[in-house]
Length: 109
Image (cartoon, rainbow, N blue to C red; front, side, top):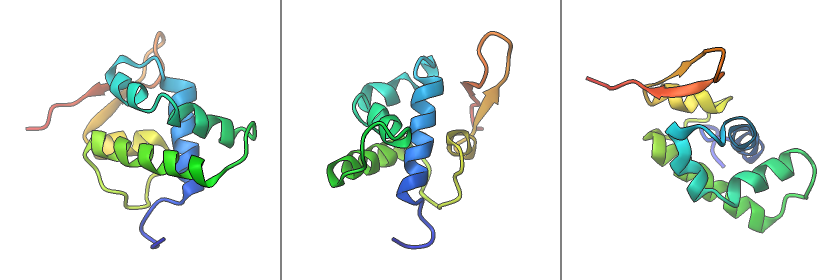
């Protein structure tokens, strides 16, 4: 793996966080429909419920690429949280009392 891509452990952390905190977010529903196995798997591995396997790694890498494609960004290795990906793509985190961290798309000119 080159130095400018996200390590598997960080992919897993980001995907697990997306699943645990935002799976009901209507703005990214498509991601969770596609990753109906990959997101829960990343979460289960991240939380030491199941071990990491080569098959699981394939699911996580495939889902990671789908997330990047969904947001239209490249893997630069700079993402720490999933909202870093969204913000790079021109999305903005909207904070409110009812729905913390809900995403709203900002239209680019």
